[in-house]
Image (cartoon, rainbow, N blue to C red):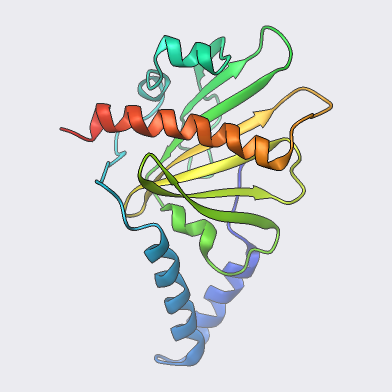
Length: 198
C-alpha cells in the first residue's frame, strides 16, 4: 500500500513555480512547508537511516518482542515503496487473525511530507513515539490499516504500517492506529540502542 502526497500539493508547487519571486503564492507555500517541518523537528537525538535496510531492519525486534506482537514470520519486503526503499515485513500468517507490520526506512523525505497542504483524504495527527515526533496517518477510506511515520532526522523517517489481513475487520480506526503505534515504540527504542549511540 504505497502512499503518495496529494496531487493538490503538486498543483500548489506548479503554481508557486509560475509565480514571480516574492509573490504571495510562493511565500504561502514556503511558509506552509516550514510550519510542517517545525512540527516534527524537536527530537531527543538524530538517527540517520542511510544504509539501513532489508535484513538489518528485520533484526530490529527481538524474538520476545515478535512473540508479544503475535508475529510468526519475518522477511525483507519483496517490493519497495515509491522510492524503492525496502524494509521488513513482520507478519502473523500461520493462523487467524492474520495481520502484518511493515517497517521501512525512508531517506528521501521526512515525516513532514504528510503535514503539507493539499491532502483532504488523510486523517493525520502529530504524536510522540519514544520521545521522537511522528505523524500518525490513515486514509479515511482505509478500514484495515494505519501508518506512523517517525521523524528520526532531517529529511528522513522510519515508516511503520499496520494492516489487518483477515475479514471482516473487528478493529476501530483507533485500535488499528494503536497497533501501529505499539510497533513504532518498539522499533524506535531498539533503533536508538542500535544506531543512536554510536
